[in-house]
Each structure stands twice: as C-alpha cells, then as structure tokens.
Image (cartoon, rainbow, N blue to C red):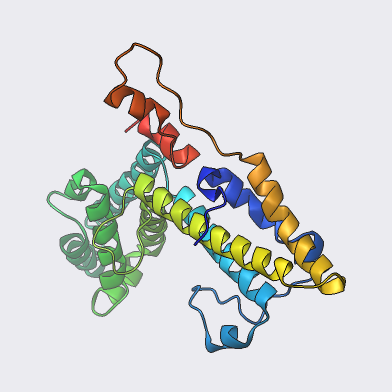
Length: 277
C-alpha cells in the first residue's frame, strides 16, 4: 500500500476530519444504511458504492480514535476515583444508619446488605485498584438487583445510593477505557497509538483508491466528483506536512540520542502524555 504522508497527521487532525466528511461533495454521500453502531461490516457493504465504503471506513477509524482520546488522563481518573470512593462511603454510612432503625425488618435488611455489598469494615473497597473498583462496583449493582437482596434494597430505601454507585462505576470504567470482556484497561497511550495507526492505514487506502480511479476516469462529471472527494484528503496532508529527519551535526557524536530526537511522536496526545507517564 502506498504511503502518502498520513503517518504525519496528528490524532487531533484525524479527529477533526470528521467535519470534512459532512461537507462539500462528501455531504451527499449517505451512509445511513451501512453505519451500524458496533462498526461491524455487514453484507450490505459488499454492494455499496465506492464513496460509501470510503466514508464508512474513514468515519469508523476516526470514531475509534475519538474513543481512545476520550480515555481519561491520570488526573481525570483520580477525580473519577474520588467520586467512586465517595459513593461507597455514602452507601456504607446509609446502611450503618439503617442498621440502627427501630424497625427490626429494616435492621435485618440493612445488616444483610452490609454483609453482601461492602468489604471489610465497610469501605475497604475504596483502597482497591481502579480496575478492581470497577469490578466491585458492577458486582454490587448486579447482586443488589436480584433476589433476595433486591427486596432488602427496597425495604431500607438504598436505591438512590446504589444508583450513585452504578453511575460512579460506569464513569470510572469509561475513563479507564474498559470495554466488555476486558480483564483490565489498556494503557491510554497504547490505545491512541493503535487508533492513529488504524487511521493512517485507512486514509492511505482511501487515498490510493480515489487516486487510482481519477487516473483511469476520463474527463467529465464522474472525474470531477472523484476530484472533489479527494480534495479534503489532499488538504489534510497539506495541513500536516511530512517532517524530514534532522541531519546530524558535523563532527559530533550522533548516536542514539540524535536518533531519538529525530523520531517524531506518533500522536499529539501520546507526546503530551509521555511527559506525565
């Protein structure tokens, strides 16, 4: 596959390109029938026009990148963890209070919930790792929603507290980039790096395909359409020009240090993140 310079396009530039795909010649290319939420190609794509396939492939790669960019930084994760811990303390304190109720049925329900939902003395789970907190929070929500604990939750009125736990757990999972079936979160920098590579491959393929068709299409409305579809891709490359490797200074030691300086970061987000890793 020919490389046209998309490896020099930044993550933010790829992300912003979604706007270009909703303007100009691309605006008239409808992908409504093919744009499934889970980004799993369907048999319909085999019969789709070329511009539809190009637009679907570009947008899907951009969306995957946006999801990677949306994974929280260390500081943001700390804030999400603060809320998760607070939701656990709130549940612990509420159940502790309910366990002192005058109503024996409420007391018994609160004791059962404390034993099933809380760890240690009631807040030990707040000292778990982020991934373990996500697992624990989802476990709490799952068991509290089933018999026999569901009746106890209703008896003591713990629903709002468990709702807060669920929201805090979902937010933390999203911040970690956790998806279904993952044992633990993939590092944010790695997710972004892989998503940028996928965008580069997709854009190179689309660029190559459009360029080949332009070369083999006679002058007329069809070629003009192809050129209009190609124009935003060419503009993207112009906005992100290829960067030449730095030449070593004469009569100086130009070993691994110079090589490291000449190597460009694969994404803006990864470059900034490396300063805090």
